[in-house]
Image (spheres, one colour):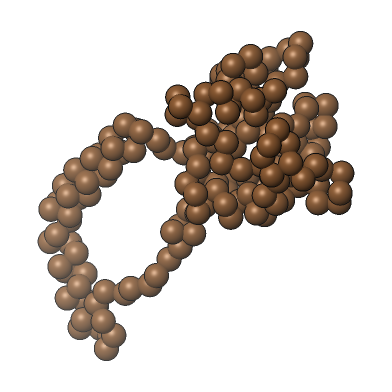
Length: 168
C-alpha cells in the first residue's frame, strides 16, 4: 500500500527511487508493486550517496526491533531522513515526529544533520565568525609563523587532505 501511495503522489514531489531488501537469501520478492528490487543494504547505501536522496523509509515492524536497529544503525552514515512505517493500531512513540503518505503513518527515526535554510544560516554564521577570528588573531598567527620559520626548516603551513561526512 505504501508504494501505491508514493506512486500516486509522484507529481507532488515524491518519488520511489529504489526498493532494497537486506534479505538476499531468496525470501524477498524480486519485485513489489511493479518496482524491482535493486539490491541489499550495501547497495542502498551506495545508491543513496550517488543519487542524493532525501528520505529512506524502512518497512520493518517494531516487533523485529533487533533487525530494525541493525538496519537503521547501518543507515546512520547517510545524510538522509530515516523513517519507519508504523503498523496499523501501533502506539506512536512520544517525542518522535510522525508524518503521513496517504493513509500510511511514518515514524521519524533519524533526521539528517542540516537542511534547507538551516544550512544557509550556518554557512553565513561560519563565514562571519571565521572572518572576525582571522582579523582578531592575525598578529598572533604572524608571530607563530615567524617562530616556526626561525625554529624549523619545514614549511610554515602544513597541508593534508581529509575526508569528512559521507566521504567528502
